[in-house]
Image (cartoon, rainbow, N blue to C red; front, side, top):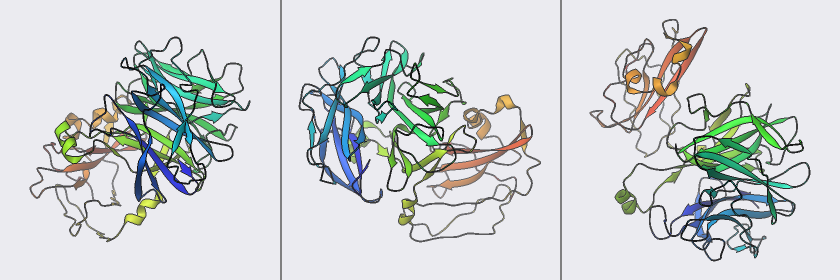
Length: 433
C-alpha cells in the first residue's frame, strides 16, 4: 500500500527458516520511496493473542477515510489449523513507516460460518465501501471440493456479518486463496479507488486456486445496492485455456493496490522457485516477488493489460543497440557486451511476409498445447524465432523466449513461449527476416 509518501510491502515470513513455517508465520515489512529500493523493517505482525497464537497468515490493507490504515489478516488459533480473521491498526498513525502495530481487543472478528471448513477460511481482501456506506470484504474458503469466496459486511470495520450466499463459487477447485476485488475504468488506463462504483467502471474478481497454484481473474458487473448483492462475471471458470490469467509462468497469490499518488493500480505476485529445500536453506530464502506491474482494462473490455511500472527504467545503465540485422533461417546472432546479471530488452522483429503463416483451425488455438513440445519443437512457416538468454557457449543451457506466427481464419496471431527449463532439444530458427 501507499501511505504518507511511502510504499509498504507486507509479506509472509518464516522467522525460523527459509521454507514455509509449519508452526509459525509472521508478517515481514519493507518500505520504499520508489518501488525499487527497499528497506527491511522489524516484523509488523507476530503471533501473540488468541486470534493468531499459532501463526499470522495472509491478509490485506485498507485505508479508511482520514488516512487510517486497517489490516485484516488470518490467524491460526490451534494445532488443528483452525483459521479466523483479525484486525491490526498502527500504534502511531503519524509515523509514515508504520513501524508498530496494535491488535484489536475484540480479535478474532470473524470465524468460519456454516458451510465453510474451519481449516480453509483465509486471506481477507482489501475492503471497499458500498453505496449504503457499509464496508465489504472477501475471504477465501472451501467446503468439500467447492471453492468459495465469502462476503462480509460491517458498519464500523469491527463487527462483521456474513452474507449467507457465496459471492462466487466454483465446483471442483477446492480452496480459493487470496481473493481480490477491484474496479477498473472502461475508457482509461488510470487506476481507480477500490470503492468506486458507477457506470464508468467494471469490476475484476481475482482468485488464487491452490489446487493449480495459478491466479485467475474474472471481469464482470457488480452492484452493491441490488436486492441480492452479487458479482456477475462475463465468463465462467472452465479449467481450459479460455480462462483469464495474469501470468503463464510461476506466479501466485498476487495482490494489487490503488496508488493514489500516481492514479494507477499496481499488481504484485509471488514466485515460488523450483529450487530444492536444501537450495533454499543455503540461500536463506524461498520465493521472491515479481516486477510490479500497472494494470488496466483493455479497449475490448475482455481482458486486462499489464506493463512493468515506469520506475524500473531507473535501473537502466549501459545501453547496447543492434539494428538492421538480417537473420537467415537457422542463424544465431550473439549480442555482446552485456555484463550485468539483468537486462531490459526491447526487440523488434520485422516480418515482411505474413501470407505464408501456418493455418490453424479455431479449435486448435490453445496456447498451452501450441507451447508443448509436440508443437514447439516443430518448424513452422514463420518461426520459431526469438531470444536465447542466460545461454552457455554451447547452447546446452539457455532460457528460450520464442515467437511463432499463425493464421486463424481471417486474422493472424502471435504465440510467445517462455521456456526456462533449458531442456528443449531444438535451436531457434527463423523463416522470415
